[in-house]
Length: 346
Image 1 (cartoon, helix red, strand yellow):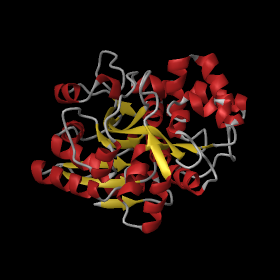
Image 2: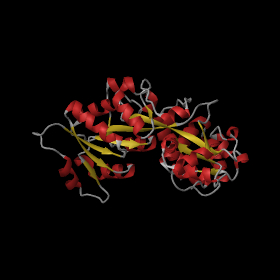
Image 3: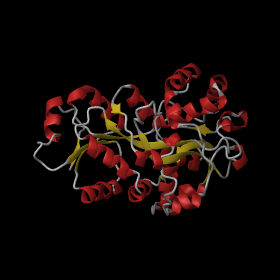
């Protein structure tokens, strides 16, 4: 069952629409910021395997978090699926999740891809990952001039850099990682250098940045890997033409590695069906579910033992990832936003 909400529902109307009488079969109320067709099969297979019916509400991350806050203790939500570590960390700080202690999840999900365990368990887990790659125009930029994040701020790339808004969670997380690697002072100098190298003001999404590089409007841009893979797998001639003009590099392979982010899940603070919620999160870490998560949006499995054949990701190749905990990256977002405001990063 899928309920989409564009306009706000009243607190009691939403609660009444999702909460099931105790006499009915087990149910699970899911708030999801993921909108991929292959996830439908993911949910259906969970129901077939467990008998637990999923009632789903779809919205973007901001809409879900706002709704959880407004609903408070009356919220019917059991499981929350969000995209990006910055959003998961913010929801944790706002008290919207509850800790989970699960041997299955702790064995399968690396410590760097879940929230800090403060003695009661983790509050959220990453179930798929995406790399923040650099794309460059092969006709105007040398690969060696775009193979580190630091080079985005190098004067040699003045007038060449394009990005989406600095305040977008994808960038807040990347910048939060750079703050860990470089230190606050050097990270701010770097951000100032990126602003000085902009070909235009930040705008659009990651796909727009890739297309701007292909058109020559920009020479260099950053993008999540799944946007690149999506264009690589497209059957549209115009998308194939874009990818013929751009090169893709996993940055910082000779230093700390490429920044990765996550899509993750958590048990809602006031979950009425906690046992089913934990069971669902454990299912998301299974090889079957990891395959759906990864191929549904051309992402990488969070469970390292799972290998998913994907022609685009296979073509991009293996790469070294950074090892700092994603929870630390999320925790830096407040300081990062202040830094961006100071340097005028729009």
